[in-house]
Length: 406
Image (tube, rainbow, N blue to C red; front, side, top):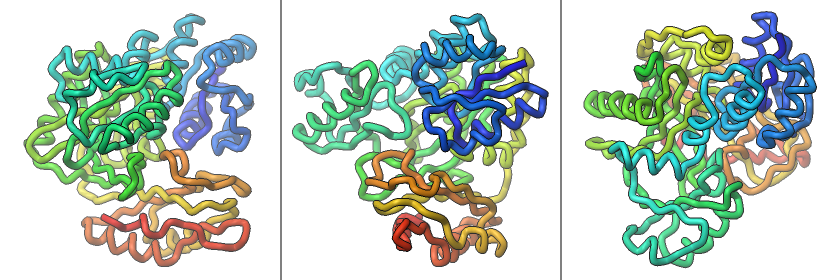
């Protein structure tokens, strides 16, 4: 059998390993020839994973038996479309993939099914009259972006106009959502749907870069600081979302805001969280979402019995000042000392580092684990004192100010 894997990040490397463990030949597609998953694959092609026709052409030429990815938002739509057109197996049909990939359609379904979410309007052209009922601050985002691309928080009409123009330019459908900002703590919820029933696998807090209006994630913290009452509401809301979108057997990621009393759903997708989230989920729930994606594609039905890990875990996502990336320093030392559980380099030597515009600008990340939150914070402080991101000129360009800020 042959599998065409879309995207070459950390989750896809794990996906390729899972496929190869089953004797499946793997073909990787990604426009970046230096992606980290490339050495894991049997073959590589520099193809845009968002170009459905190009992916379809490659799948036909290579006689792929399946097209799949893991933990990738907009790519899921391409996977579903190509699989449906070629009659290949896929755990989600194209219509459902479209509904869960387009934030405009998503918001409409939320509203129609009583799923709590912020007030919003959707526009292709800016119309001040349409937003008269919305209160500032306001969030603007493309309906079909990922990694926080094009998402901005604005406080007045002039900022709104500029943010809307930028969001529409990024959107492939030239459409943007304008919605009210909801105050509270953001949580991310990873779920697995088995026979229509939602099983919550992992709930964690999300920290964004402070003072940045682009909502770029710099950290996740497990377990989330929420009450049992909110945890029950999370479970109920996850079930309502699965039912509203007709999800039967699928991973699911939900982003929510809570003020401690109620929830507001920001968005969701029929996938697992990106980056190293699949490892965290397996660690805290004992459920392997990467294996589940392969099982589903092969027509098998995974069974889930999630549990809760009592340990505290933090993932620090690292950003740098502008420069040309050369190397990491101090990471292996801190891992040997037991402060860092694991770490990953996300940029190759020679990569140009510019302004921080999205989550895709991370240069590396590391994981910390300890019995208590205070012990994790102490580890984070020690790590921050020793690690460096070195540019081509020998300078440490790591944004140390973004680490251990919680």
